[in-house]
Length: 190
Ligand SMILES: Nc1nc2c(ncn2[C@@H]2O[C@H](COP(=O)(O)OP(=O)(O)O[C@H]3O[C@H](CO)[C@@H](O)[C@H](O)[C@@H]3O)[C@@H](O)[C@H]2O)c(=O)[nH]1
Ligand SMILES: [Mg+2]
Image (cartoon, rainbow, N blue to C red):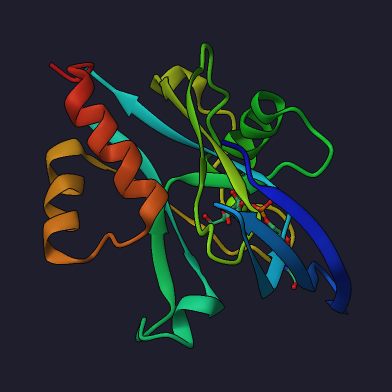
């Protein structure tokens, strides 16, 4: 049985770089109407990719400063992640190819789309498109590091080490863990 939703008020609280709205709506559920007032943060949608080499048993990750983690318990603010970017106006695969070149320096061949996931559905609209791709040394086109002020470090590490870094807490980014575990379960590395 589908829910009936009636918007009562949709107010923009902030639209500086991204958009924060406060939405009031009536939800009809099992014959009862409940009123919710919820803040919704729209930062656009994104794409992410895990680059792996079966031959070298390595993965390519990046490390960058994330201020949102620094204000919430991440002591030096740097986070190890899979390459990722905002879609802007690109299709997800076009976006992730561009991001791979800019952030990691690799111009990858075939990429495989895995799934699309809402990453924080309690209040953030963002849907992330997940990809993996096998890479080779010959595909390196530049040193990576991102554009403008992004200051990204590129890390090429053993897959076993990346899994260990999840256990120790050195890797604690959701999308990164999802992709590392996907790779482990897929058997693509064996
Ligand atoms: N001026 C300004 N610039 C901003 C702001 N927020 C982001 N930017 C700029 O927008 C760019 C975003 O870089 P991308 O590589 O496209 O995105 P991302 O930050 O890596 O985001 C990706 O990963 C996130 C974490 O998982 C995802 O949330 C996101 O969807 C995407 O996949 C960066 O250059 C950053 O400086 C802001 O509030 N103000
Ligand atoms: Mg990025």
